[in-house]
Length: 306
Image 1 (cartoon, rainbow, N blue to C red):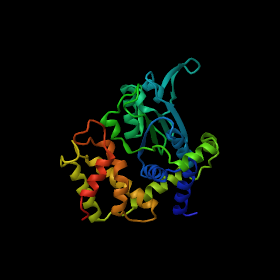
Image 2: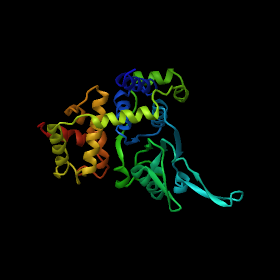
Image 3: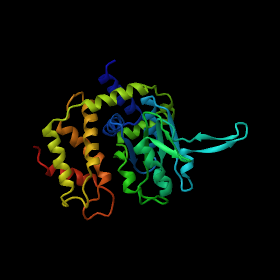
C-alpha cells in the first residue's frame, strides 16, 4: 500500500468512529503529520476524548491519558525520583508524560502551575526533573481537550501555552443523520478498542519527513506573508501573528497538500487550515474572547491572492 492509500485509510478509519465530522478528522491527521500538538475545544460529550483515543490507536502510537484536575501537580505528569533501599539510591519513576501520545483531558481544569509544566515538554520534547534533563519518546504529541472558558472550574490557557498548539479544532454537535448513527450504533469506546493500528512510529516519521519536502513556491509564500501582515494591520486583531505562527501555517498547509495527494502547496491548502492554525493565537478587535474563526475567514476573503 503506497503512502497516499495509507493516508486515505487513516482518515476513513477515523470517520467510522467520529461520524459526520470529516473536515475535523482530516485536520487532526494533518496536525499530527505536521508534527504539531492538537487542542480540541468543545462542550463535554461531543467526542473529544474518543477522537484522541482513535487518533493514537490508528497511528499505532504508545498512549497515555491524564485527567487534569485542580489538584494535579507537575510531578504527577513528569514523574518523581524515589529512594530505593535495595539500590541505596534515588531511582526515577517516569510519569505519563513519557508516552508518544499524551491525552491531556480537560487541560484547562488544572492550575496554571501544572499547565506550565507541559511547556518544556511540548516545545523541547524533553523534561527536567531534579536537575536532570530527560528526552521524551519520539514522536511525541500532546492532544489536549478543553471545555469552554465560561464553564465552572476552568483556568484559561496562557498565550505561551496556546502558541504551542499547532491547531485548535472544535467538533460541535453532530447533524441529525450522524446523531441517529450514534444513537442506534455500537458504543464508541468499544469501537476504539477494536481499531487496528494502520501505521508504525517509523512510518509516521517517514510521512512527517515527506511533509517537509512538499514544495511551497515563492508566490505561495508571498500569499502567506500577506495574510500574516493582515493580522498585524490592527483591522481585525489586537495583535498580529508571530514568525513562529507563520512557520506553523506553512507546515500545516504542507501536511494538507500531502493529504490531498499533491507535492506542492496550493492557496486552497492555506485557506483550509488557516482558521484552525491561527484563531487560537489571535484576539479579535472589539472582542474580549479568545480568537474568532469567523474573523479569520473574513480576513481571508479580504486578502487578494498574488
